[in-house]
Length: 157
Image 1 (spheres, helix red, strand yellow):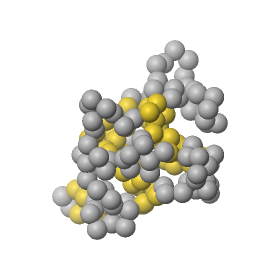
Image 2: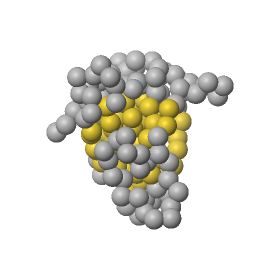
Image 3: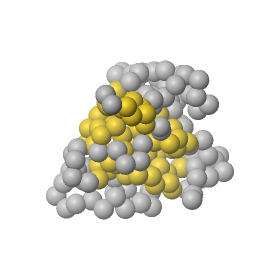
Image 4: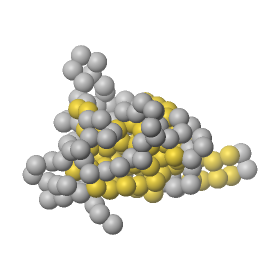
């Protein structure tokens, strides 16, 4: 499997009982934990792509808590030993995992299957409305050698 320096995909443990189930997503004593910025949730309808973006300062920690999503990561960092590497992972109901993405790595996801995908993120910095640490490319950019399988006529990004 291809890797990207500094990225981590951590399987998450689901703990079921007669009342339902619990899944820890990120703990402050986890080896990949750095800092707490905020917690947010976003959704994507089936087949919708939300890509590409990277951060210069923050590390992202995210998972899919409902549905399934295809996550793609691309290392565009000049000094990285894994520059140019792509990683693809499928996470969600059927494969719970936390994705940790360091600064400088492009990332995005596509909701797959027939259900809405619900994404929970715990970045290391809060969102700065005046000066966002977010740098974007369109999903079909020629700068990243990845095909999201975009459906004609749907607006993605």
